[in-house]
Amino acid sequence: MTYLVEYKGTGLEIATLDAALDSAKNAIATDIGPVSGWSVEYDETINDWFVRGLLNGAPVGSMAVVTGPEPVALQDLEPDSRRAPADGERGDPARLLAFTGGTPAEVFGQATTWLAGRPHVVAVGDVAWSAGPDGCQLRVYYLDESAAR
Image (cartoon, rainbow, N blue to C red):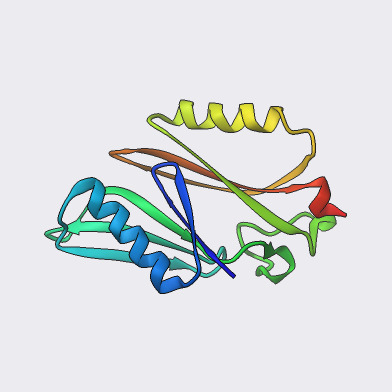
């Protein structure tokens, strides 16, 4: 079981949650310098932690994302969740890919190009969007043919 730490388009797999959160904080501090505190939010629906540096209580720099062990079993999601699967998708594992860039057009363009070149992707279960002063990130949760079998 590993955790994926994503920051500014790079990813690193870490064995424990504590080490993954520390790695996210270190990546932010290395990028922007000293901070006065941290904001760590957890989304239990998708099993992700969102880490931001704080300076005098205000968010600074880019956000790091720590993704819990994958794949997430779609049948475990609440029926009213924003990631609720279509009928044919129940029980299929979701996969995740993140696209980062400076503008929304750039990020959505990357995702469109990637999806167009992968006919084995059979469904997009959800997307997650974040934008900040340092850029944009689009996370796409998808199913491919090998997972659908």
